[in-house]
Length: 207
Image 1: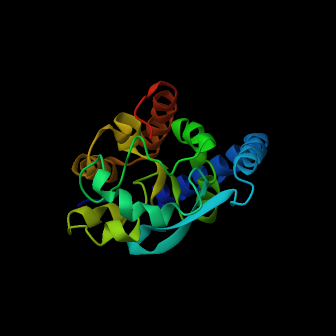
Image 2: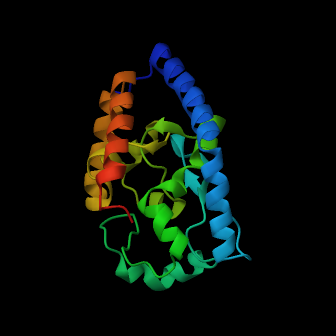
């Protein structure tokens, strides 16, 4: 597969990531505080943030940040829910997931739970645009074809989120990610970011 690795593109993309994440964190700081308070009110004993091991560029693992939207023992309960998976392939999605809290339903529906990933972008572990970073257990099920998703830095949003979000299965998601990797450019990244904003405000597929 052809991957755009020109120095000009990579430098500009990283600069855009740093500036974009800093602006985002600054503008959304008040929202961060409000969400943190709501999470603590609903579940005082649980943490505000949820960190999860994900697989990034070239298979390197890192900790991805999110606002906690589930009960404290969500990972333990997952084993009991795998049989209810509503998407195909190496992913787990369930619309009526009983592990999700009341505040969690709102922040997941609006994708507010994903905002702390701006810190991952600032650290260079993620980009504003790129394939979603998978879980290690998902990568264990990947074919060589699927692993091509790991050839670039993962992103907060990507082509499949901007076009179909959770309404497609794993195979279609991989297809869209590889399409992005082959076509990626600064202009394409900007288009995906703008389209993602429109999808977030009009999509009913978030869960």
